Image (cartoon, rainbow, N blue to C red; front, side):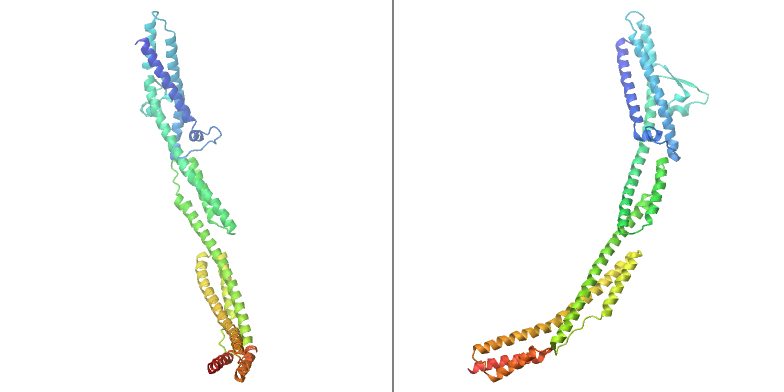
Length: 400
C-alpha cells in the first residue's frame, strides 16, 4: 500500500467517523430519546410492556455505541498519528504495514458488553473479548443504529399520534365544559371521559408501543353525543324562548279581541259577534309551557322538543282564532263608520241638487242619523235606512 493510498483511506475514515459522530448526537438529541432516557428535564419513565422489552435494550445499545465510537475514533486517530510519524526512506514500510493493520485488520478489541446488539445472540456465554476490524465494526454499528432509530421513531410516532388525539379531546372537553356551564348544566359524562383520558395517558406514557386507546368508544363518541345533546338543549331553549314570545302574543291578541268585543257590543247590535277564546284555554296553554320548561330542566330534551312542536301548533291556532275574531268584530264598527260616511255624502248630494227640503228624504236622514249616532246602533236597521235614502234620492233625481 502506498502513502497516497494510506492518505486516501485515512481521509475516508475521518469522514466516516465524523458522520457517525454527528448521527449519534442527532439521535441522542431527539426529544423522544431524551424523554425515554429521562434526561434534560424529562422525568425518569417506568417503561412497561412491549415498550420496555423493545426500548430498554436499545437504550443500553446506544450507550455501547458511544463506547464503540470512541474505540473506532481512537483507532483512526492512532493510524493518523502513525502516518504523521512516517519519514520517507526511514522505516516507512513498517509503519505503512502498521497503518494497514490498524485500518484493515482486526485491530479493535471489544468486550462482551461492547459487542453490537445485532451480534450478541451469536456469542457463547464464555466469550469475553472479540477482536474486530474497523470496517466490520462500522457495519455492525450501522445495523444497530438502524434498530435503535426504528424503535425510537416507532415510540415517537405512537406518542405524537395518540397525544395529539388526547390534546384535541381535552380541547373539546374544555369547550363542552364551558358550554355546559353557560347552560347551567352539570354534565356527569365529562367525569367519565376525564377518567378515561387519565388512564390512557398513564398507559401511553409507560407503554406507548402497546397503547391501544379506543378513542372512538371511550372518548370521541361520548363527546360527540354530549355535543349533540348540548346543541339540542340550546335549540330547546331557543324554542322555549320563541314559545314564550308566542304566548305573550296570544295573550296580547286575546286582550285586544276582548276589548274589541266590548267596544263592538257597546256601539252596534244586530250582528253576529265572535267570542274570544275562553281564559281557561289560555291558562291551560301557559301551564303546558311551564311543564315543558320543567321537563327541560330535568334533562328530558327529546320529549320537550316534540312537546314544543305540538305546543307551537296549538298556540298558532289560538292566535289565528283571536285575530279572526278581532278582525270580524272590528268589521262591524267599520261598517257603522262607513254608513255614517255614506249618509253624509248622500245628504250633501241632496243639498247640491236642491232636494234638502224633501220631507221623505229629511225623515229618512233623521231616522238614520239617530240610529247611527246612538249606542248600540242596530246595524241592519241603519243600513236599511241609508239604502232607502239613497234609493229615494236617485228616484227623485230621475223625476226632475
